[in-house]
Every structure is written in structure tokens, then in C-alpha cells.
Length: 316
Length: 227
Image 1: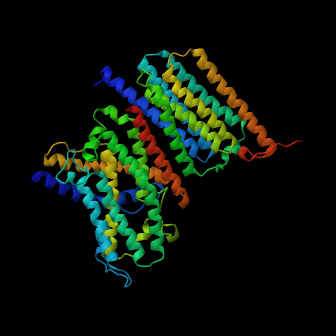
Image 2: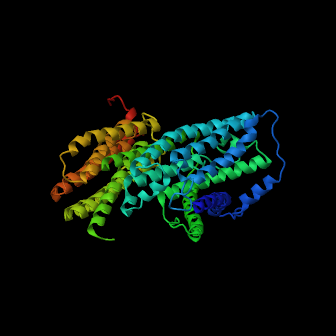
Image 3: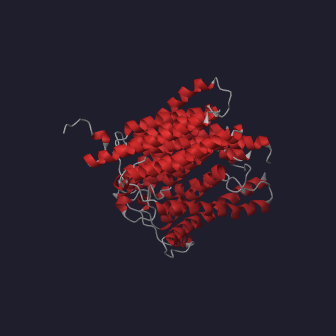
């Protein structure tokens, strides 16, 4: 019992500690592909450290939502980290507190408050980014629903720890069409949700074209640090859900020894690194879509998810 | 690890996977804007069809389906695309946007609905089948057939319409390899040859249209003209 609580805490620490590293590695790899040297992979840590030591400026026109939001954005991925398999293949202490739908709601809560805070200050770019994020969000919602329903329909459960066992026992289940199509559709969903390239350019600094980034423009000091850290943790969490629940549930700790759990930390980092390579290929070979083409991108994700469901129905 | 039962289930799953991806390519044909991408998706679809034939051939232990796969690969993924690219001018393929009657998200939603219709049509037929692999190949083949027909309806350009016809044929074949694994080879050969000729004739026709009209947007040619 105590073990499982300790492991759960370790899991959260891993998410907190390595999330900026993942962001930094992705940025570095993207620059390397464009034959530039790029910033150090530890740059996000330095940014966060610097921001924590700066003064915070808060607009006098803003309400409590603006001050409160960085904490919510920072805390919601931590809550989700308690629920999903990051290091262990067996459920930990808090695993049954919520299922995948619960995790989705908690992440959506952070997004909701970030949207409200963007509108709160009256900065003209904030509401624009906020409304665009909502547009992407509501288009992604049906895809998320179909993916979630199909996953729970196929595996017979909504707890991620049970789902990820289903895909590899026996190994033939890995090649199930619904599984492969779900992976594709979830990958498109991650790209849309975290604002990566075909949908949004994370490194763009042109306010009129921003979707995700413009929501945090008004933050400074500690607020900005928490927003940045929270955003990178959300990306880390989504990677973990994608890799550990859907794609490659291998390399997770199966026993309750401390060493086994610690050994799975480098393994998950290696898996995320491989995933980042795929992301870099996607991001470097595609152009950003026009705003109203995003419906087509997510429409394709929806069709893929439905195809997954149909093939599952056929195999019943 | 490698006992026959495991291999059978894995092959069945791989066949189902080929089916799922086949359905995906059928959706993609409806939604893609570029002419050249349409052709590439068609090639991918034909390769998936051949793969399904190989998996089913291994499962049934029939050499026959391997020949089908070989014919499909040779004709549909190499010869037909080549014929089309030779007969039709390059400038058509360079074109990026295809005008569609409905916008892409809308036609994707309709395509999804059509896939469900195909499922509903195929389910009653499956009650008579004894072959477990038909339950994946027949509905997806019918869906491929319907979605090909839908592609013809919704596209205005000549080449994607032609690819729609070829995709319909692919759908029929996809159902065929599971329903009639013992179809005589001569029938398969004749069908493949027919499709080749269709592609050639329609490619040449498209070229002529392009020469006379300067466009291949056949959806906008609504009236006859006397010369």
C-alpha cells in the first residue's frame, strides 16, 4: 500500500521533472532538421527558472480568474498523472480515482480556465486565440468521444491500466484494425490539442496567426513560468497516454520493486524520444493549415476514428 | 509461440487490418484535394487489396489467391497508374485544388454515413456465410464500392472521377477475394485486363476533352455544343 503511494508520487515527480526536457528536445530536433544548431535541450528549464525570479505584472482590469489560472493549468496535468500509466503496468494507489474520461475532463478544465483568462484582460489578441482554441477544441471533441468509446468498447473497460493490457495480450491484438486506426486518429488529436504544426505553429511569434500561444501573452513572472511548465506537462501526459495506453505498452514496470520502477523512467524517456522523432518528421514535412482547413484535418481524424469503430463492429 | 492457431489468428487480424486501411483509403479518395495524391491513394488501396488476397490465400491454403494478388499488384499499382500518367498530360496532375460539389468535412460525414449503410447492407448477407473472413471483407468491399460511386458523384474533375470508378472495382474485388476464393484465373485475368482498357480509354478521352476544352472539370460541362 505504502509502496503504491510512493510510486504514484514518483510518477508525478517524473512528469514534473522531465516535461520541460521533452519540450526542449523537440525544439532542438526541429532546429537540427532545418540544419540549425538550435537552443540547448535544457533551455525550457532555464526559461522557467528565470521567469520564477522575475516580478509579476498583473493588469488592474483583470479579475481573480487571471491570477488563479496558472495554478489550475499547472495542477491539472499533475492530477491526470496520478491516473494514467506512466511508469508501472499495474494500477497504482490513485488509479481508480478516475478513468480516461475523467482524465479528459480534468485536462479540459485547464484549457477552459486558460481560455477564460485570455479573455479576462481585454487584450485583443487573447480572445482571438481563445476563440480559435475553442474552435479547434469543439471540432476535436467528437473525435475524442469516438476514440474513447471505441477504446472502451474494444477493451471492455475505461481504466487505462486495463486497456493497455488488452492490446498486447495476445500480441495478435496489436494488429487489430481498430487499434491501428485509433492510433492514427489519436495522433491527429494530439497534434490538434497541443497545437503542433499542421494545426498551429508553436514557435510562431505572429499574433494574428497564433492559436494556442496567444492565450498566455499577458502572463509574466511566476504566472508565465507556471503556464509554460503546465503546458509542457500536458504535452508529456498526452505522449504518455498515447504511448503507454495505445501504442507501445512495453517497458513498464511489472513488479513492485523500487529498482524496476526506477528503470522504467529511462525507458519511457526513450519511447518519448522515438515519438518526438516522428513528430519532427510530421512537423517538418507539412505546412501549417489555413484556419478553416482545420475542420478538414479533424474531419479526417473523425473519419479514421469511425472507420476504427466500423471495423470493430465487423469483427464482433 | 508459432503454433498454427496463433498464426491463423494473427493472419486474420492482419487481413482485418488491411480491410480497415482499405476503408481509410476509400475515405481519403473522397477527401483529398490533389489529383496526384488521389492517384497515390489509389495505388495504396490496390496494394492493400493485394495484401488481403495474400493473407486470405495463406489462410485458405489457396495458391490461386496469390495469383490474384500478383495480377492486382502488376496491373493496378504499376500499369494503370503508368497508363494514366502517360495518356493524360502532366499539367492536370500539377493542379492542386479540385473543385468539389460539397466541402470536404461535409462529404467526409456523408462518406461515414455511406460506410454505415454498407455495413447495414452486408450484415444480412453474412448470416448465410460459413467463412469467418467474409465478415470483414464483404462489408468493407461493399463500402469501397459505394464510396467509389460517391467519389464519382462528388468530384468535378475527370481524373478523380475515373479513379472513383477504379476504386469501385477495387471494392468489388476486395469483397470477391473472400466470397469466391476459387474463382477461375481466367476470370480474374479478364477483369484485370478490362480495367486496364477502361483506364486507357478514359485516359485518352480525358486527354481529348482537355485538348478541346482546355479544362477537365467535366462537372461544369452541362450543355452540348454543335460545331
